[in-house]
Length: 249
Image (tube, rainbow, N blue to C red; front, top):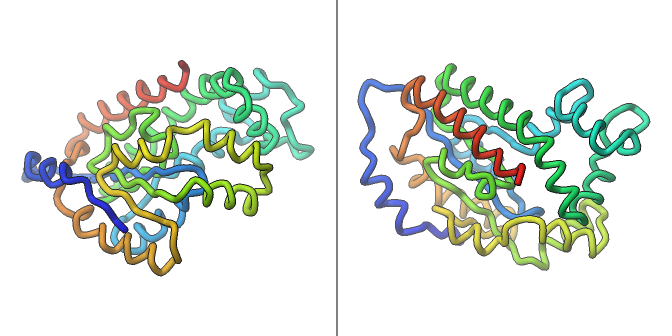
């Protein structure tokens, strides 16, 4: 099913569009690990959204050799977390941080500044070129407070058993590692409670596409625009940087 929060229509009605301004609608997309969020992203882009900011991809970019995130990780965790080609061994680092709360907090403190800077640049870019609808694909959307920048939030849900099965089959994780990764995130039920739209991804791909299509008319409505002039974009970028400081705690 595609469930819509009743409060969403009230939010639309209370936020009349401003004439003569440039509007960039930012839609948040999140869900549990291995929930199929990337598939939903592609469907959103196919059926109306214009572009996406992928926070997972941004994280990988920040961890490339020579980047600030890379240098900080090597300094904090050591060269034993590098592959032979010099890249960060994300699998090995993931096994460490998902099983150790303190190490995960250390990694979050290391990465907050590169991620905040990268997100700010991408928001400014899409505003400058006039992208109408941008999807913010962020696993930690609620944890970092980034939902406050979004006109609407879509959460993708699946049963916990499906998450574990996908992690073990797709990524080769052990049962313990899969459970640790799921436990490290906000419970999926809590994310769904905070969402404007909930998309169930427990069925076939064809069913999922129909659920996304069902959500699109409401998502594409003239909704709450935070990016209607340059000043609000600059302020939003500052808020994004401050929100990501939550990761340092």
